[in-house]
Image (cartoon, rainbow over all chains, first blue to last red; front, side):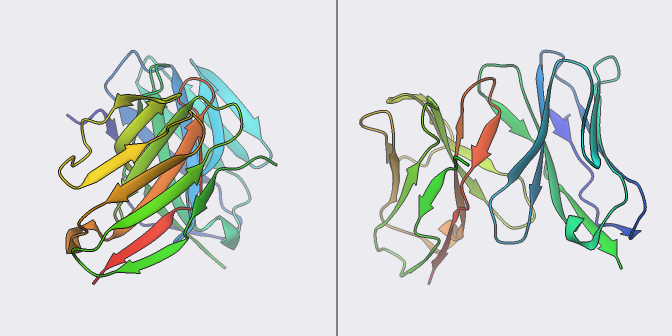
Amino acid sequence: QKEVEQDPGPLSVPEGAIVSLNCTYSNSAFQYFMWYRQYSRKGPELLMYTYSSGNKEDGRFTAQVDKSSKYISLFIRDSQPSDSATYLCAMSEGDDKIIFGKGTRLHILP
Amino acid sequence: EAEVAQSPRYKITEKSQAVAFWCDPISGHATLYWYRQILGQGPELLVQFQDESVVDDSQLPKDRFSAERLKGVDSTLKIQPAELGDSAMYLCASSLVGGVSFFGQGTRLTVV
């Protein structure tokens, strides 16, 4: 079992819909949970990060961590065509060693 | 807004030639990472520095790749000789705490 699992997609949703992106993990020692957005031919951009468990909201984006289920989610409300990108989850135990998911390709259809 | 600077953005080189990439992390970030990313995959760690010291280079192909961060600030990643299979995006990132990292725009390397 890989440490971090992420469905590669592609995921296609109509503009304005709520998008749910998810990752599962096996290492219960992970403490930092990150979401990155990566446009084609660009470097990943940090969207949000959460320390330990709980929810965090920033504008249209909400990150959730469920440590009991070893499951993290990123929700995008009122999705826009500009949200079309690859979304990477990443996790660390706090020792600066980061494990990435393979990324989910998201397409928002106008 | 502070950001990680990388250069060059694009590089085309012939196989067996040497190539070098440069990275300037966000000021004050002690941890610096070099990653390689192949299209459709997540970043793969090549080397991790804490200040000027290498923390993890277990995935760095040391017969051809080298990395340094002499003064604990900017860093250089070198490939010599380049091979066709080295064509990829090379990403630099820096972190202040917990591995929460900020990435540069990357260098897209094409080996011909």
